[in-house]
Amino acid sequence: MTRVGIMTFLHNENCGSSLQAWALQETLRNLGYEPYGLDWRPDRKEQVRNLLASGNSPAVVLDSMRRRKARGERNTAGFERFNREKLSLSSACRDRAALRREAGSCRLLLCGSDQVWSPEWLNSAYFLDFAEGQPRIAYACSLGVSAQPGARKGRMIARLVRPFAAVSVREEEGRAVLERLLPDKAVDVMPDPVMLVPGERWREMCGSPETRRTLACYFLRDQESAWRAAEELAAREKLTLLPLAVTNEGRRRSGALCNPDPLQWLRTIASAGRVITDSFHGAAMAALLGKPLTVVRRWRDGDPASKNSRIDQLMRLAGWTEDGACLPSARVEERLSEQRMKGTAWLSAALEQALKSIGQR
Image 1 (cartoon, rainbow, N blue to C red):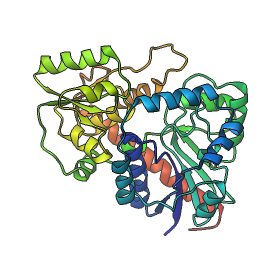
Image 2: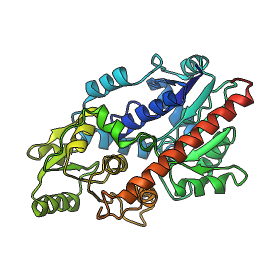
Image 3: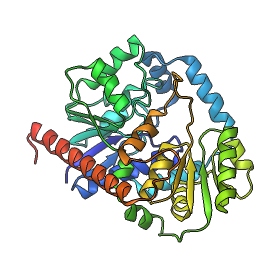
Image 4: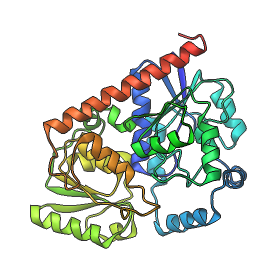
């Protein structure tokens, strides 16, 4: 069985990130490949090296550290348990030399999905620049932005993407960015890996819980307007507000499930009567599980730092509005099925073509 090495986010303790990593491995297994997650855990020396080489702003790094600290307690053990039990992973890779060693056992290398190509947090390891001869494929990588990166980072991204045998990104906005940087490079738009797995498989994964009269509330940023909208929606529809709490305000709420691990998070959404969220993966999972959905925008439209393009793309391909009035519906189910077939077909063809390029069947 052909082993495919995968680079994606594994340790940012985000439920959506963890579940998309599992979904990509599940899809590869179903296509007849052996998925092998490259467990990238850079040590402090490697982190400093990347900061100096990438052009990432120290201010951005410091702001991220501040926000990370403000999040308070975390559920590291729950996420590590999920990785250990649900993912096929290499040993921990602390530096580029370790990545190259582990990647050496793979015929092909694949990166994606999630914001692994974010210009804000540029890290060349997620562009597979450590590869030594293996073809590189990018599946649904997200840049997370719609604005063109600065000149230096633009040149770096162009150089890093050019060697890929096949490239797909998650958002139309990301394709537009890459097409301006690499006008001769074919770039496709493909659905996030969670959408390659049908709703019934997700329900099976979390034990197919019965639906309850709860409003699953998942916010990645505390906004007074978002919490007010959740309270009004719960009162109007006579639902019990159930925060999936990863923010300080969320953890203070009555009945909150604090810092859920990926399976707890999935089970809560699967059992909810309705979902309200500002999260891409929260919205995607609600759609896949056929839940009525309300989307709250996390950034102002027109904000240069906005990452709303992720949910905008999801809404376009699924054909729903922000108030979720069309969910659930047979038309949304049909469009999700179309996207699943499209993404799986693209991935299968890219892998087969890459194998042919190195003479392997």
